[in-house]
Image (cartoon, rainbow, N blue to C red):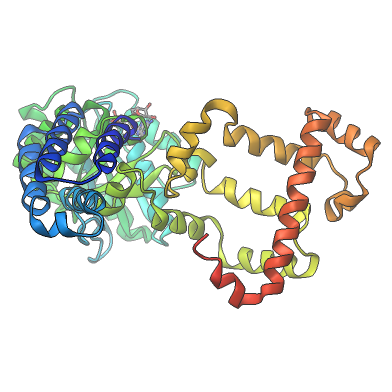
Length: 444
Ligand code: GDP
């Protein structure tokens, strides 16, 4: 995500940091470069103009130049302003506080990811302990109704039994009645899409809006289409007064133009972002965190949230008990690996850690973390329980057996055992230090 943008801003700032003494001219020069980078990233030109003017106003002045580290100060201002551009307030949260069933309407052009986002949103809401009903209301695209029904089945989430020969407004009101009778608290309406914005479509969406009074009207827009997505957002907002945007396909968006422009152009917040085709790849959007990510500073808060979502409390307690009882062995290590895997791909997780994204690039293809993880798991899986509890019993013939069983080499097995033994020693040292010692290590 945003790889191009991150790389280019990084090289602008590297130059800035490299200056022995910073002058106003250096800063002006950097800002000109930032401007170009943003324009190349397909950020709306008016947005770029305002952005650079805001940064300039704050960055060019004695205060910054006199500060201990002027370059760092300039980067911080850019980060703040990027965050502000994408919205830092609380308005990224869905407002579902109303008498159930609460209607949430998703609209957008064909192919933007509307139907997929409906299913993703339903899953997200169920995880937040709501009871959603999916409502297919796109009667024109032949497969749309079936697509949503299939996704619903996959997730075990109820889908209203829409028929393509019923008026979409009636479908939605029928679905509301059905939800009331059956205890669903949220209606997720998958409305019709078109290839382009057209009046007939808008008229239909307005009728649905009139009849249902949705609490949220979310435009689903494809980040990869850059400024087109911004224009689409502008026209949907003019006609429907949307409450926010779901920006999809951010995982494939190297430039970031739509993410950086939509809010400034439409005044409406990006509320959710799609980060992949999988149905759990939908996240709440945080402008400030995104700014950090764009500047390669990581996103530790999102990482913590992911960890919390992946491990439920009982599981965490059971794991802690096991760790206490058995100590840090290959067996308990394997449990931890499983949890990490539940949090998403290792590569995407590493990008959330400050500096790790850049470090990974330097390592290049030498060791793809996910492949490494799979290898480690395969090796541990090929061990017997006794071997997992105490790797010291692993002699030559056992190592050979494990390598064969896991499709790896004896060198791979040796390396894992060596590294794990080192980690184990480190853990023991830490435990000896006790909680106080651990606290001292936090900055590591
Ligand atoms: P609709 O016509 O707007 O309903 O679009 P669909 O929901 O059918 O999605 C169109 C395509 O985009 C499908 O292949 C989806 O898997 C894909 N898609 C949707 N959201 C995302 C996303 O966040 N990331 C990626 N990579 N693909 C997505």
